[in-house]
Amino acid sequence: MQMRVIKSDGAVEEYLHTKVIGTLNNALALVNESNVYAAEQFSEAITFYLYRKNQDDHVASDQIHLMVQAILSATGYDHAARALNEYHLNRMLKRRRTSVTWQGEDQVRPDEPWAKSRIVEDLMARQGLSRPLARAIASAVEEKALQLGISRIRNTLIRELVASESDAMLRAGQQLQMAVE
Image (cartoon, rainbow, N blue to C red; front, top):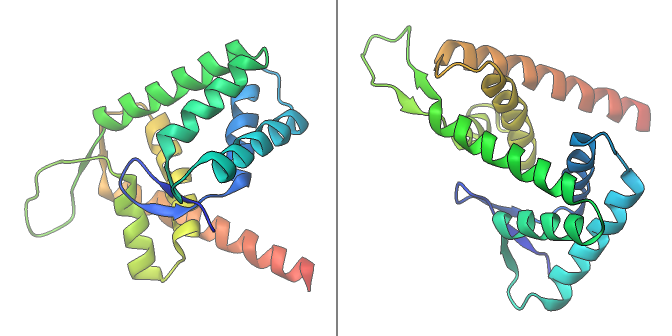
């Protein structure tokens, strides 16, 4: 049985053990204690728990977030759990405070709330990318856009960020493919 994750935007994707490792290592890095080995061990515990104790084959991303915080706190990394929670809350706040302003179109459109899922859907529809790759690109774009610290971001800037991140990730994928062959 493959575990599925219900994202906060309602999208459903496969559970990836490596994403949990990344989240844990990022939380440790927030407090200058990056430790991939510890992140792998904690992730193994979370994955084991999810597959052994979870009666359903779906889990909400918020539940995983809470498990990450719990395991960090239980293993002496309270400060990393707090830093991760602060990062998570700040990101949600930035998302809510950011809107997209439409320019360069014949029709006048009102500002829209920031939605990473729109970028994902657009990449899948227009470029035929897989959902995981589209989500990775959209996450990188979101990180850059929210770091700008502006409340209204133009759709044209988002398009440029998407094009730049898409090129970079597709190029990296091609280089990796060539290295493997």
